[in-house]
Image (cartoon, rainbow, N blue to C red; front, side, top):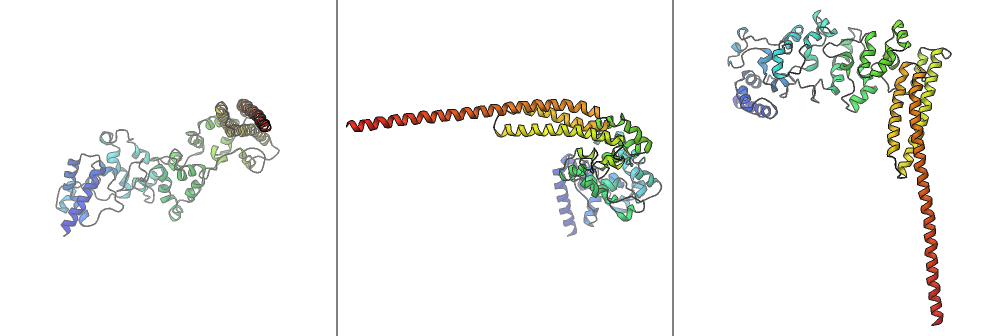
Length: 424
């Protein structure tokens, strides 16, 4: 009976495998039938926890022995898992990076399966906090399997993968959200909660925008490290390039460096980064400038000046956008106006980016061009509305004229009919 059950399991196993694998079907079926690791573990119901048939290694034809050693063709269990047959078994925590590195650090081997993949992950790992701690004998830190899992490893582009962009924050939070574990290192555990509420987290986790940054985009992948003071702006600048360039060329960058402030983080935060807005600069209560400056110092005067220029631009732009909506509602030609406002919108974005220069003159130079475009759009919108009213008035006058003409004809016909009746 057990043999029948095992055969049924193997049949289902092979059938599913043939559907999902990219290994030649005949070779695969032959290989599966000869793999006594699978046969025995299925019979004894000892398949690894969370095992997935779609595991990338299994899909490429690398079964149990590919990692754990031994001879899967040997029917005798003791011989199959003997030292003679290079059986490794379950690796200890400290040796897992080298265990995975047997293949993943071998450029010749990896070229056969994934020629585009990097082969320095193991080397990078040992430059990370995780790797350094593991070398010191700390078994609490993450290793390869902590992030990628052991027997359910899927390609990073697979939405079910533990390292698919949308899933990465949850994967990191498995350890970094564990209060008992993190208390040993004096590390906070609210990173995931804060990130989920941030502009990046909302884009990634709620909107499923995989272009939005996850933990690894800032902290690194295999070489994960906490960003240092000097590297903060460069990390943010890998996406926000213009902001970084403007900040680094500003006088503020020198001040931040001397005070050992964390560049972008000082104003925007790190895990809980709110959506930025014009409210952040200026002299009112919401301004973050007041976190460091007093109301009467030069820094606030600069901030107020920048805010005034942005507010003036936004007011004109909103007016133009309102007029464009009117033109569209009236069914008039809006194409040219839309194109002009797209260019103006770009200048508004550039003006807000220019805030990182901390120079009102730079902001004014860009916003001035944008305001000129916006005013041009307003003139075009006004012309379209004038044309609309001209057409409307013309239609009204024409309608009245037609009504008068129609009434005159009606009265004429009626008069003739009445005259004819009298004569009869």
